[in-house]
Image 1 (cartoon, rainbow, N blue to C red):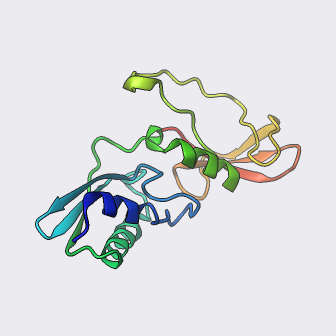
Image 2: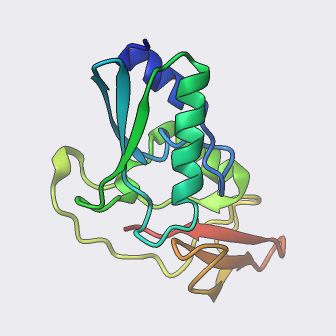
Length: 162
């Protein structure tokens, strides 16, 4: 039987299937881990309700926890409250940038409601240039937009704030 702390540690190694440089815990997809009897219940909130990786993430969570010694594992999908880019861990934001995905801004501390004014340009995660152009509102998934740097000419994605 795993403790909740051991379960969180095992989940830290579960990569997001679409962005393998961050774990499902770093993205804030895993909301709760609850010990129940001889097993664990893991509550996840996908990045958006139509995320095509939801089933694969659930399978990866079950596999990781069973490999770490968990008994029964159930994964519960919770859509409310909806996942927010504010749930991305600070360290994961830098990992996203290094991977070539510009992370969104964070919200104000204390959970205050924030009006976000979106910059018309984003800094290129590769060279830092502000001369960037949005190519498409949607990137490889619906939660990202596709951009290109006009200086280094490299394409990159932007994780849209939700």
